[in-house]
Length: 394
Image 1 (spheres, rainbow, N blue to C red):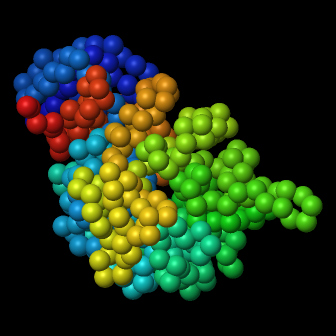
Image 2 (tube, helix red, strand yellow; image 1 turned 135 degrees about the horizontal axis):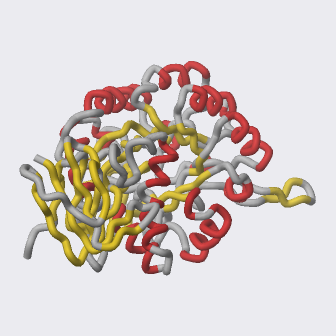
Image 3 (tube, helix red, strand yellow; image 1 turned 60 degrees about the vertical axis):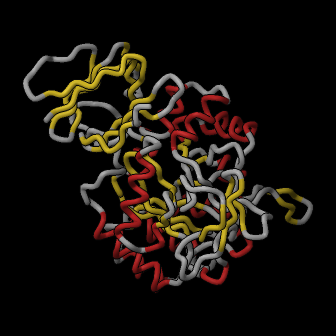
């Protein structure tokens, strides 16, 4: 069965096609244009007041629907992928908190089994290791007791999972940090700076070694400080100053002030910024107390009015949003929808190295798309030509 989706406007997202049609065959996009060819075996879905865009790609998400990837169980993975499909996500990286090394490897094994699984939700592209190579001074919601320096032994152990690990967040100022950047990047792993106090010279050296991205820009990154009588760039300013480093934003209205988002857009441009959820297991759940990672090891978070805090309520701890919530927030701030859609599709696809098959509605690309109504509510999510979510009719 092939699928044709007719909408008011199609964002590819490179261009907008009025009264557009997207046809999906055998899990891939076969046609994008302004007409639909009548043919046997083609199911037509008509959304006359809606727009269609490439499916969203979330490069930083820990959980949702009551589960966390750190639970380490296939059913938890499936629950998270199904839940985030309701927010337009069609692909994601399972992001793992800092935890005991043995447990981290268990989660990597589960990830390996789940990758490529045809499910009823977002596709698992691989794993994002957010830790354990973080600076204890900027551990944020991570348990400091599980942080490690990136020794050659640890790095080589993780590289045994290079088929699974697609991204690593680390602090390059740690002993062995720059060497770790080089080892991961030369193996094809995207390396991000995060939870770091690195000064400019270290960030610059890490950039030369292959560091290419900044994790949750403005959050858990050191800022300018004095060295003697001179003020020098911290990790944040270094990232902004180095043109080749891209960044991600948690656009939830809490983590980053709108003016700081504006600064990032002016400095980097939309083409070098992506949006992420950084969501945890409480996404889609009522307020309460939840574990930030595996129930066996993780600290508690308190969710109040949909905002997740550390147990002492002194800091933010992840989020409870979906990708569509970030899209809506950016549009409310006045950012053009076409640009915002690229920040959740073509940009992350390019950053993670899947831009030849994802992030764009183009013949031959994976049949991943989302249909949004006039309020930007998700009406339909399609992954590889299969409808994985459709908004219930009232």
